[in-house]
Length: 163
Image 1 (cartoon, rainbow, N blue to C red):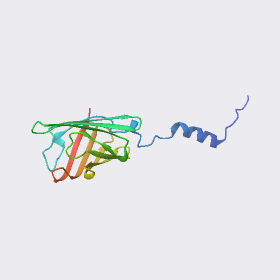
Image 2 (image 1 turned 90 degrees about the vertical axis):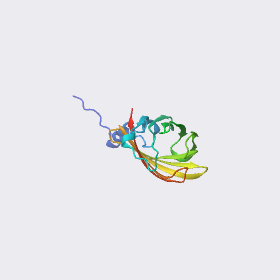
Image 3 (image 1 turned 90 degrees about the horizontal axis):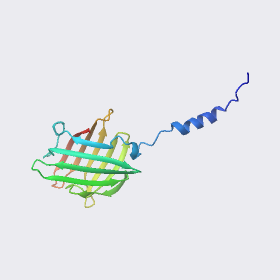
């Protein structure tokens, strides 16, 4: 019986590393927040109000970019729709539509389940959001602090459920 030639251990380790190297946490393609999220108004708290009566956020990824589309209905029936496409690199990206608190935002991935977004209006920071996706991937909790367009202090905790 012939014995097989043995590979040096270092060669095996290097080859395995090529196949099991983890993808970076900031990769938009594998981000845990990608999908369609529906606001659970009953579980959410808006201070000051009014809270939206309904809301949907759709987050898609293509290449290194993330597109966010937000649709809300306010208690008076007014509709809000705004969107942005960001590289998630902490640099400002324009916000289009009718977001009363922002015309730009800067988004940064903190880790695989958390994103920090700084909203700006006229170049001035208004609010900061921290968005955290639950371990099971079914819930996204968005905490917003800062000052809104009316000059009011904001502390909102919005709970979204994945659709």
